Length: 361
Ligand SMILES: C[S@@+](CC[C@H](N)C(=O)[O-])C[C@H]1O[C@@H](n2cnc3c(N)ncnc32)[C@H](O)[C@@H]1O
Image (cartoon, rainbow, N blue to C red; front, side):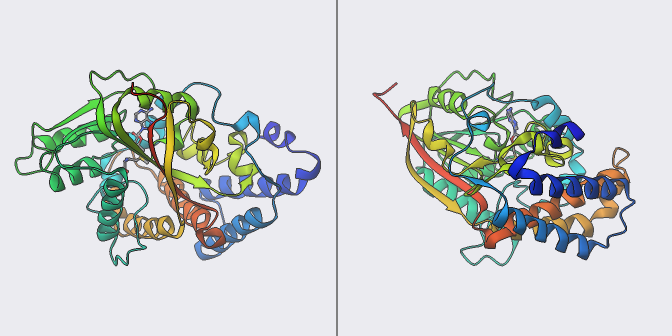
């Protein structure tokens, strides 16, 4: 851990001290030896986030060593599955709510429940990509199939192909395919368990929707080039992922990530909202939106509440121990602070509508 701090020098010393305190606090918390009561910890995280957002050194553009045109498409995907997405199903079933959607819900339209807010987000995504009944859709990184399920239900002539690396999630979807009456129990739907970085598909699609994958992408440029090969000439793509507006070193520099990269999302990162605009050789951005982080804050608050409400069920799984529970409690709480900071204006979700850049492929 010391080595990581050595990289912080000169004008970044204040940030370095904060990071040191932050790392110490995290380890205490995960070991179960923290003496800070939960409400005080929440207040402390909130304060640290606000201080970072307001006073840390900021950059006008992403420094080139952290930019989106180097390295492989994705890094540490196997670790990511092991540490996160392939954790026992019982965990996810007991906090995500009925849609099983594992990304930001949309509260801006006035939803009063998580389920309604997720339905509103699914409607927002399908509307923004311009989905028409009868089209062929590719749902990349489909999670537990919430978007595919929504499309199968609301667009009865659409065909959906969903792709996902997680075995737990693909098994869950397969179980729904075998459930008569479930929207995924239809020939119009197919699921492929594969790594996006290496996936080869036998056809092109009218609409490609990529919700919550780019947090796990290292090379935006290569990822966009790859997506463009799966898109029909007149088709469109909707990307949706966590993005921030002010570049602050601890957020942009993955080597400083002492909690999320280590215990929650190996190989993961948050992207600067405008970084994608630099890579329009294959797909050009036709429209973009920044969704305020308060939508995610509220989503996470319900997830955290569900998590604790159902903790006895979660604890019954033999692979779930108290350290895991403390880790995920901190993960959800920390995210609440991150998205809620600066009134949700710094960290939220970026959405991008893209089409082929050049002549039809
Ligand atoms: C935050 S979840 C979002 C899931 C879903 N789109 C949703 O909105 O609920 C991220 C998803 O990306 C998938 N994923 C991560 N890395 C991947 C990769 N290299 N190839 C395919 N899927 C990947 C995970 O398994 C997970 O399903």
